[in-house]
Length: 267
Image 1 (tube, rainbow, N blue to C red):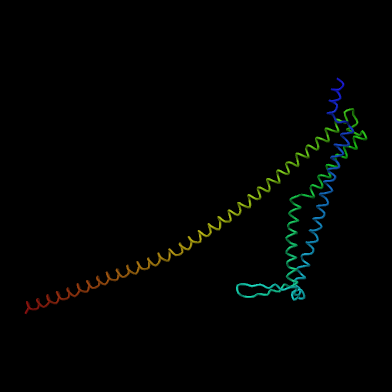
Image 2 (image 1 turned 120 degrees about the horizontal axis):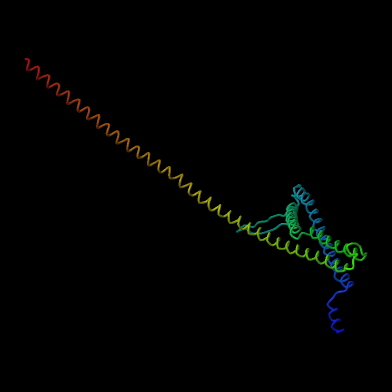
């Protein structure tokens, strides 16, 4: 019976073991992580400041005549069948350095946003300070750890706080993954829409050209039809006029013959 009790007691953690191993271990780990994120954040930000301040100076120096006329090496090559010799000036080197510094600056800025060194530094520090605060209250038997169940209260408070922090970290990781996936899908969708817009604009351009050519053809056909109609109308009018003239001439001849016959009858 005594052996069974000892075995059961082996599954339990004493007050000293919990404080020294579990609680103090979590405090040390979070303090270490806070210091690491702080150092990373400060180093990257310091590098960003140096690059951001150096780029305008380097660009200004590259535009100076003394650097534009300073040839540091010559690159010989062949383009087609022609020998080419390209001098590399100090101004060109400074421009390349400025462009490289700009690329590095952009990368560092995105790394800080992605890894969240600043927010991690603050959160790790806050967790370590909270656990240290609970430890001090318990050791000094200060409220709420001034009751017979103070040890159980310390364990419940500390573990509940750590569990919430772990859950929050998991949600943040899932949110980051989802945001990255959404941003990637969004960019792909934008590219597809851009390609579709370009295809549609090309189709509309072809249709517009056809529509612009069609009225010209129709206009030419209409003009030709109008000319033909005018010719037909003119021919018809000519025929009518000629018929009227023939009719008038016939009437005149008939009247003349009638008058002569009347004169003969009277004579």
